[in-house]
Image 1 (spheres, rainbow, N blue to C red):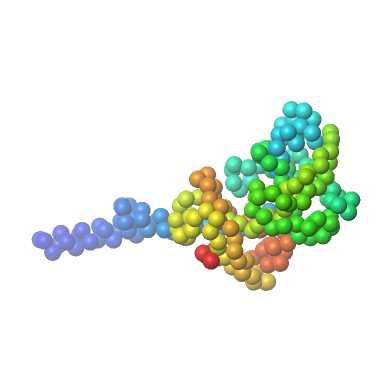
Image 2: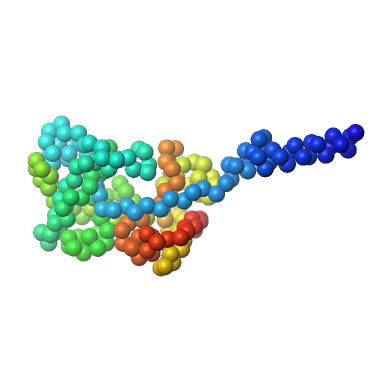
Length: 223
C-alpha cells in the first residue's frame, strides 16, 4: 500500500509540473522564455507643455492618434517641423505624448546628415551639452537650445523580465537578429519600469542595416 501511495504521489507531482496545476508548475511557467518584441523608433519628439503652448497656442492639449506598445505613451496627431543649422527642414516630425518635463528631438544618423547637426548618442533625458534646433508649429516657432539626440538603442522591460535575464536598470544586453542581413547589435541599454512590457527600440538606420522587416528570429541576451 505504501508503494502504491508513493507512486500516486509522484504521478500527481509530475502532472502538476506538466499542467501547471501546483507550485512546481507555476514555477516552470514563470521561467518561460519571454516574447521579445523589436520595434523601430522612427524620428519623433517629446515636448513640455510650455513648448506645446508656444507651438500650438496657449493651453493646447495633445490629442491621441494611437497608443504605443508601451501603454504609458501615445503617438499624437500633432507634428512639428525640425530645422537644422543648414536651414534644411524635416517636416511632420511626430510628437509623442504625454508631455514631459523636458523637450527632446530624437533623430536617426541619416537625419543628422541632412540637417547638418552633429548628433550625440544619448539615453533619453540626458540632454546636457547636446545641440539644439528650430521647431516650427502651426501657431509659433521655438528655438530649442538643446535636446537633439540620436537615442541610444535600448530595451524596455518590467521586473519579471529583468529577473529572467538576470539584468537590472542600465545594464547592457546584445540582440541577435536573424534575417537576410544577420546582425548582432551590441550594448543595448536596459531600462526598467513596473509598467513596461518587454520591447527593444532601435532606430530606422539600425533597422535598415539588419533588414528587420524580413527578420525570421531575434535573440536577446545579457552582454
